[in-house]
Image 1 (tube, rainbow, N blue to C red):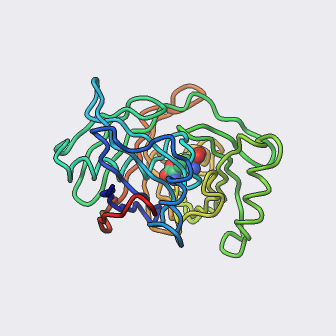
Image 2: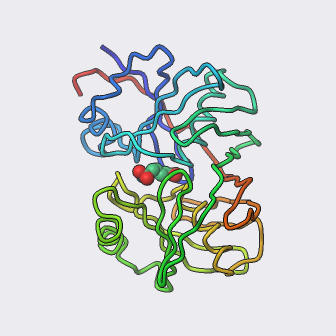
Length: 261
Ligand SMILES: N[C@@H](CCC[C@H](N)C(=O)O)C(=O)O
């Protein structure tokens, strides 16, 4: 049996995308998905995403982390899937799709994809960090020595430590660059390593920085290790609404592989 796959990346957060409208992919095969995402034994990616049919929206997004487990929302993956749906002819320049956290609206603007994220009703403020859920759970903390920080060691300690433990959280380290720009490095749960960019992560950072008064702007630039993303939002009581994530999403290559990888 042969598997046709496409490789996409959004600011260096990379994904194996599969057109699964016929629902033939072995979606519960954790080992297979982890193997496909493996950078030495497989194609190599931070995650794998299925594009499936949906009755109410243009398509359904099913997201797996590189460890092979189905997980919560992926912002960069969602943007890549919109570009893929356009490539397949499933959508033109606008779309709604269903993901694990609800319905998303998206728009293709040239080389970039604008993705509406779920509303964030509350933000937890702690002494040294902020925690919020932007479709996926995110720990956000300021870090002056951002470029020299051992993200693997410090990120893993926070991800597995209290209060997150087994369920875990993604961990974002942030340095302010100007009144509307922040540099971000993210340790991703389910990849269990730093990724070059995280869409739900930079969304969490933008909201957290506004919440903490580090910026008064409603559109913030986020410099990730893989490129620049922009997040816009409106304050809504204790939380935020009309949250949009924007940035590039590109096809890298496509391929076919045999089932016995
Ligand atoms: N890279 C993603 C986040 C993917 C989900 C995350 N690893 C988790 O399990 O919470 C993004 O761009 O948002």
